[in-house]
Image (tube, rainbow, N blue to C red):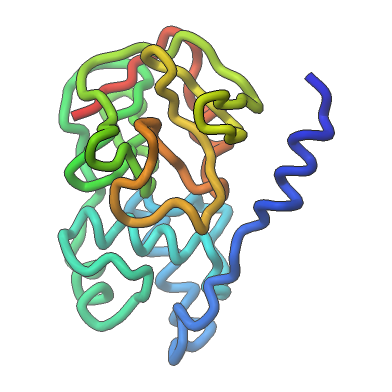
Length: 208
């Protein structure tokens, strides 16, 4: 595959700044927030810094989804209070090895390694009328850059698990906190490569 389509998409889909999301927080408070999110699986340790980045905002959204509170990406008083008492999410299903679990109710994707959730990410699944299928699937093909002919859309970091359904990256601004896709599982481009490289052909994708 030519490299230029991916480079073009990277240039067009640069993550939007999380402007205002950390308003009122000092650099030290933001760093403590990022460290807590990383400890609970919502951020990779490499993203712990004193900046309230797009990754921070999405990590906050993921935690808010898990906690069942307002999904706005802002670390307000309720979110911070819940974070202090929170524990790392647990898999919904048991089993060894690597797999992905997707909660349609919570709009979350969990990367699981030997029974432990190692990352919790926000997603957007199929909207009403185009729902993402639930069930136990296996990754049958992966493409660094795929193209959907029916919807005329590029899908970077695509891992196909059933028919034309895939886990794939999408512009950050088009991965809302609610179901909005044509049936695939949209992952913010900020995190899509991580999911793509975590999975391999033959591994499980459990959607419930």
